[in-house]
Length: 342
Image (cartoon, rainbow, N blue to C red; front, side, top):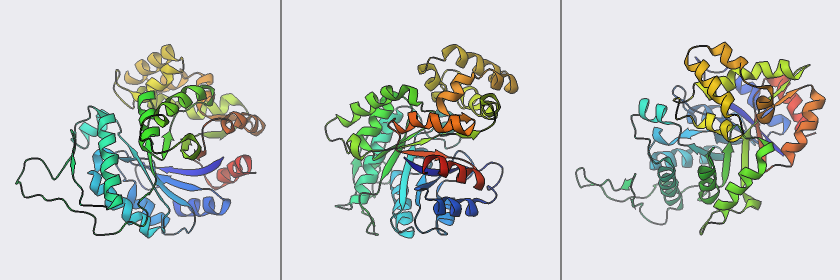
């Protein structure tokens, strides 16, 4: 099991002490550090700035949103960051949700799986640099279909450091996970539960079995965000994480279109999901958090006394997860490194 540091996206301002935190993660043997974007800070600039102060740790986006950049613009950024970091960049991509894609970026959201497939294919063509890039898809066309008629196919001026630069996809539903296994080098998982490992292994296996699949289970990476919250009791630790789960189940999406909430419905929490959503969308955020069952928290997080966390880790080690992405301050990173890396 490898460890990654999840810095994520910024709140009202940049996180305090991030360079020192990343330096400590590298010293402790963490394999990677990850940034993200929502509708504030972007994922690429902090990674370039902080990554420039490191020498070994891999640098990943978890996630860069498809709607934020055209596929070739994303490929340009990936080529640039990979060179600047000496071949340490991992391109993590995600479709986000309709509220952000249409409300923030002003882009259409329907058919996210087909859009993702086209997006990744164009990036691969750009990285390969075999010929000028052309593409005639439903969602992307190169050259642009219509317009002035003067567009012409071109290829990257820069020769990529790695034509096989790794691309990971963030996905939650079984169809999206299968697509990830088919076309990507890794899966960025969130709200994954080792209790349902067989469900996800089946979805991944479907993708690996498709004609032209890029990887096999043996060389595919699964990087999963895993909250680790030590405390004297399970309930004390769970209370610290309930508000986050209430936000994602209740507020990160519309009532009828919330992919995070769907994950918990598939895990058997349909009734709890509805109650949490209703409370959250009615503005009763504290009550929504209180409605998150402890069992649900334990399904997706490691919580409670250190000895319990150490025991519960075994289920994660036996799962398909290859890298645990964790949050925390310097003392927390040291604790996690001792627990996971020994």
